[in-house]
Image (tube, rainbow, N blue to C red; front, top):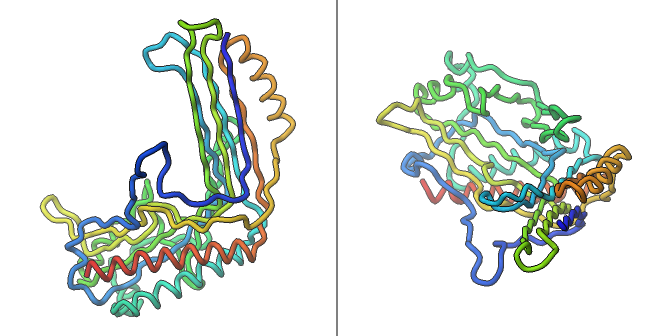
Length: 331
């Protein structure tokens, strides 16, 4: 007999932890990570090529428990949860972005940097070849009926500015690096990703085949909780020229440990459709026979826009402080 446990939970408040696991000391994650530190040294004047904030509005996670790779047991338990943010209009996200940009430029100057005039970029023939997207740039889900959807988000530039069109994989176009080499002034591209929830997951597989008649047990649990974070990988691309085989003049200064502002900012509701609930029940019944079962749950968070704005702004302010302090230290 196989026992399958599926679970999905909604949390309204999550407290940030330094690590996860049983006894012993949790691994400490440094707040920021720097790449090619030498390229930041001795630089006091910068240009800002782009500043953007990406707000995640839909995301999902899943957990699957199954037997070890060397086992002939094909049973499993899989649980998924999908979360959607509602109630935060574009105007609020734009306001958050504008405030974050103002804080960023103020922080640069407070840390001893001079920000060059935009005309240095707009007047450069190579930079002029760069293509732009209108702000906001929105990403919608693909294959939603089949896979449950992919992450959805909206990326904003400060009011009056546009977003650089990226190459495949989100890479900056070649012209940005070429122009930086010509201008001989570092160009900063700062990009932040603000997520609206925390996901958690836990799986367990336990085989009792040789000790009793229960066979294998599977447990897969996922959870989602309200709270704002600036996610790892957000930060600064420091551009100084084209990379060659023997020389890389560019660097990165990125958030490594997430900037966490915990706490609820709206109302969480179970929005799982009747069709999905029926599929969950069918899978559970089938799983009792086949030894494999899966379930999915949809959560809709109706945000209070003012509370969301306060938490997102606090997270971005802390991210700016963390990155600009590290930038000044690297100089």
